[in-house]
Image (cartoon, rainbow, N blue to C red; front, side, top):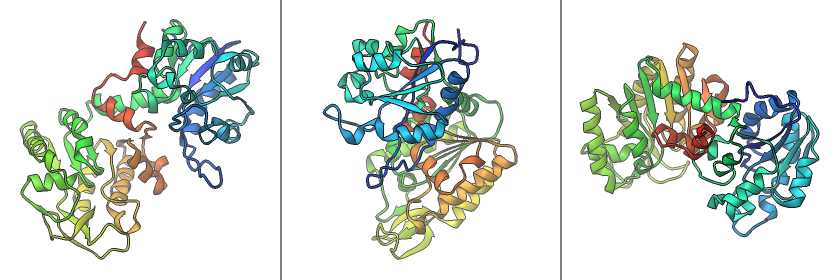
Length: 398
């Protein structure tokens, strides 16, 4: 099977599915985080360097009724050109005569960005005819949009069938798969997973999968309080999911049976309201008084977590330890981030994945100090859970 390293791009039009769904400041029109564009650049530049032209397709936001100026990819053309160091043509459609003419007229070394594929409802419906129309814009297909690989959409999965011998992953997806596989399938020990975030309900599947792999599982963020309550603690007004208390009890039991060190925070920074300027204090996490809520883990917890992380060879971080968006409740998440950086410096492999963890590592300017930062939130979670991703499967199928 051909791959991006061996394929001859001379005279070819590479139709590349990228994930350029980047945040834009509505007032200034400026991109506030171009991580996804920069992550796709190596694949694009490889094709150009090797004699091909590039046709880029992406979604942008969630338009509901066809074309909307607020969701037009034209807004990112200039910035994309700046990142790539070359001019980028744009066409105000992704299928049909206008798009086809623009893509067929491309010369070697040129880049064309198609309009938002989600301006057509057929995209998210996974419509075969729409996928076929998209496919006419190139003669080789590259999927480099890991962030949407878990969607069976026309441009991410269905389209691959029209390139039976000319389809493969870009550098970004290759790196994503390699990094997750390294964490899940390596024989190096100990493997530590830090799973945080607001709700345990959204992380049940990943926790159950990780219990079969990890040596240490650190639970943090709002989801920790469901575990604390499951252990008989008092959590005041902290975020709780009563329906998942039995599930939390099952996980505690399963971890013990499998010899996994399941670490639940022992202290918390609590507040009398959900506000950065709220009154706050530190207390035992199972003794939070009524009217108070836990918004960060406490110093005793971070000290214990740092020791676990420091002794680890492989580290997966998915989800913050507290409400890190508020300055007064970010210390726990910040301490974990720096502990991961220190472990990485000493030779551990660290994978950061999931929207909030990525936002945190970027907020503290540490992205370049860990081994790998995933661009796919939901996709990475599903991959970790062992779910077959349509966008990955479509490339691997004969």
